[in-house]
Image (cartoon, rainbow, N blue to C red):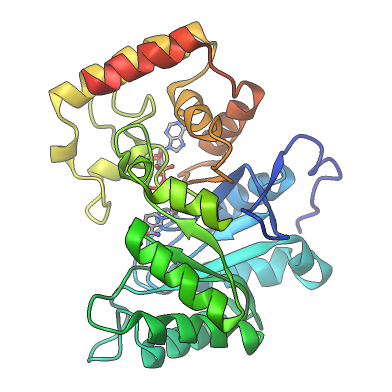
Length: 330
Ligand SMILES: NC(=O)c1ccc[n+]([C@@H]2O[C@H](COP(=O)([O-])OP(=O)(O)OC[C@H]3O[C@@H](n4cnc5c(N)ncnc54)[C@H](OP(=O)(O)O)[C@@H]3O)[C@@H](O)[C@H]2O)c1
């Protein structure tokens, strides 16, 4: 039996999501890895409890999270029912997405109305809830008219199956177009979910400016570069780490010597700041006011608690920023 901590709102910061009414915790938890059918139920259930007890109100899912695909939503639904039932639903921001392959045939991926609405219905059923707080188009579809994808998001909100609409991995030009369509439909997009971390900075070339201009929030995914921007790989590839798992999206080939050199140099700066490397990497993102929340993953409650401590020091001196920049560009 889980009883949420009374102190759960004491230490979290809640940031406004763009110009919307929605507030999100500075750190949100994603269920892409570590919450699937292959993972240990009691272990990740504990992570969810610790998250909520620490003020993390936002949990991010997608139709295909697992493995197997769909199992993260099913497992989350079970825990919702057991531990977060009744009135706690109103304290949670649950998001899901559709865009990647989920079922066979021509209607099981991308951005058609047929796929998006069917997928949202399936997600609601798997989680055992009547609405999600945010429904995303998971990726732009080069073959479907953008109007159709946006009309599906608009319908999701108008039908009450979702409260807000978002997009993920759309570039600056695609975001401009999506924003204009949704405005004309009367359901403004409130959030964009791009990959953004110290090692992957594509959003700095225009996307962040578009989001600021159009009043959308930004929630970077993989802010720790899937674990590379932590102490995880400083001494090789540990058993059970994402890079060691057969279904992990981080490949051992991504852990190159030059990357590890950057990681250990960044770790020195983190130490000087009295932070872990994960804390440094998250603080570096959150220092930018355009970032609403960072969407972390965690394979244990201990990792999550470590990441949460980043909120204790989010400001950087000019010298620290220059030192980080030199390492990243070196
Ligand atoms: N929209 C999209 O297309 C998209 C794509 C990818 C992800 N996402 C979302 O973003 C979320 C986060 O992505 P991600 O899991 O790649 O994020 P991440 O935070 O970059 O990486 C998480 C991994 O880093 C390690 N880690 C986390 N905290 C740590 C700490 N304090 N100390 C040491 N190691 C730590 C763990 O690795 P180990 O497992 O090795 O312990 C953990 O599984 C996903 O769950 C999903 O919700 C969205």
